[in-house]
Image (cartoon, rainbow, N blue to C red):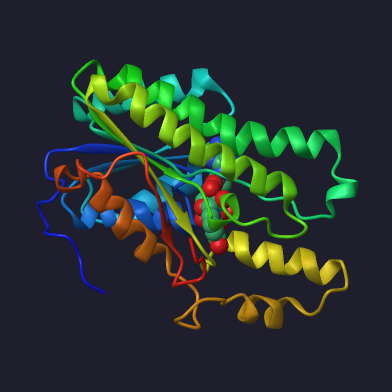
Length: 262
Ligand code: NAI
């Protein structure tokens, strides 16, 4: 896997939500590889801290903090701690998300609202916190949507809808905030080998669809016949945070091994 130059993000600090594990941890790793500082936010603050320590064993460039993307005040507090520690903020990656599987006819109002509150509302809250923290100096925001936001996968209606909202929010903020020197793009991963995907396989197993290991191994549609790795998503995100990506704006870029035709 090729990498960006080790100075592509030098001197820049980026916040990543939901970064204790999975894709968020891959994004944090890619930001560090590109020379940036990274603040890993997660519901699980201890796990965020331990991932930060694992990715940055020498210390000084990664920080793990507890924050909940459904709670604007906790994002503001994490942003203040970030600026206190690193002196400013140049990028924000809205990655935290959840999935609840089930037939559309049976989605409860609670689960519908939860998916929208975390996946779409979390991106809006994160973007607003970033807007304030950039303080008029500009910056880059990358939202982790999903190819589910373009394709209507069965048994994931609320998730699909929440990710479609993220894609449109990305376009809306890109056009509205261009005047504030803020670039906003989205990445749409396909099947990425993470705890979330394993949990989806386990949920399907509980529903009698098959055994989790076989289901997980089979979740590899696309041209490469393998899962996407979190670091592969991370490296695309890291590129979108650099000045070289300034001309790419409001896009929803598939990182899916060729799974999605559009
Ligand atoms: P994951 O479940 O493995 O990791 C998600 C992390 O987000 C966890 O550490 C969790 O504690 C944290 N989190 C959950 N709710 C939060 C909240 N309210 N506030 C702060 N942190 C919270 O998930 P994964 O697979 O790494 O997914 C990351 C993002 O990528 C999600 O937005 C997901 O929808 C998206 N995605 C994942 C794909 C996959 O195949 N794994 C495919 C396409 C998109």
